[in-house]
Length: 287
Length: 324
Image (cartoon, rainbow over all chains, first blue to last red; front, side, top):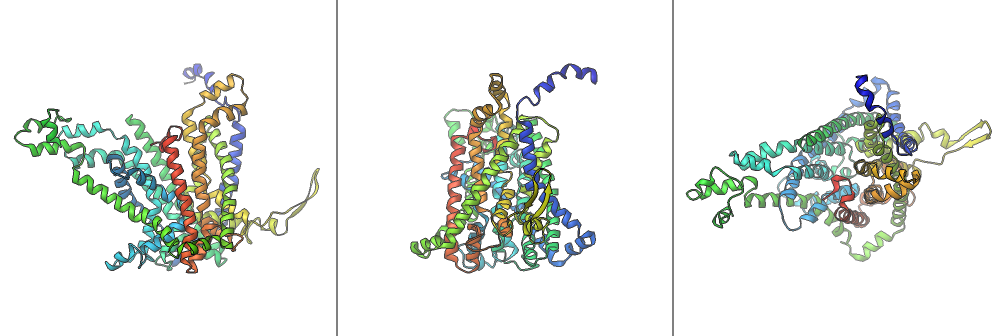
């Protein structure tokens, strides 16, 4: 190996770090990252480990804490799954069809990124509340949305939608029509083509969008607390419980819940990154 | 439609096995032609379904904000947004955004320069760490600063009494931090954390893709490092920079969870506009709450218009995933 690598060696160091400012920019980035993000985050774990495993376990297994974590993760999962379907649907309509107002609707997809979560929260509560424009019809049909876990899910659908649409849309636009035509000449009908030719190429993107929407939904606070009703054990989310513990000066409790959420979120982030790496690989493999 | 094509003598795009039988079985031809697109009725259903969904989840909530804001008439609206607490909230929100965005801009450019113009071990880890704040709940983002700077935090003695010590050369020094939690610095810190990756995320893929050829050319012609950055790199990334600033400031203005934990909700002093909305809403002052909310909704709409304009007009100078 050393012999074959020799001729290439002089070229590599000269190509690397030829632009100035590497030390300055990297040093500044690392220092800022450390001060703002890493040290404070590590602080949570230091503080949490101060409770000892028994102390942590006691807080984690409190019924109120368990149900709050369960509600946060359960509603985020439900909303992300719903968004995976509806987001793919919306992306499909945008990429494949022409209709009036398409550009406007396309631009509106990013509204949840731009609209402050508190504003979304009070608007969704008023819309889906018992006297709201949509809520009154659902109420008449016997479906209660506001102040139930279903309401939390509605808020998380709003928050997570752009993640799925914006990840699926470009991938769908790249799907080659030749593949569909080939499948058609081989006698496949439209449903078979969609299900067995197009959807398999979309799966990595849909999954990545799902994971992003899920990760965002688990920690979401502003849009949820207005519509949730915040009944302990029924519709109280984990981030809200953290703020309640803080207001009671129960720093240990708040830290333990935060550490649980962080651990679960980091696992998620790792999953998202490996998914996206795989997505990039399959896309590169196709071209 | 396919029958029309056949009659006009244009061969069908797909050499379908049924095409030969077209005269005797026109219905089956129609089916085969439809194999790369859906029938009209299915298209209409899919479009209507998607639009109904977007209406119920995106457009109606937005519309409702403005309708509720103006429900009590224009007079009540003007009164609600020009009240002293509301004005103080607007001012604080703008001040925080004005501090946070430049800080993240500086970080974003530095990080993107280091990551996308150089090779070094651990680069992927650095990118993942920059993304970390996206995976952290805003409430936890607020909590971490309470744990450090709050009344029970590690740094509290530095804030409460300060630190006095003797340093070589300087002699006796007294270091005292200002109040951070329930004050402006805490709000700024929490907002910087939450918006941390925005600008770096926009710049890194674009600068990676632009490579280093132009910078190398400038350097070989005798430009200094800073000249190269200001005259070559910056013009190449200016639209992406603006795009990142736009997203970052939208989030900074609207941040709620993180700020709500560190601000203490002191009216007229540490209330940002989103917190002001919450307080009014919880006091059942719905019209006033929606009036304040409509200001934020309006700024969100302006953000969307500018963002769409940038994507449409300068799409080729943005990261690939924002081109239309």
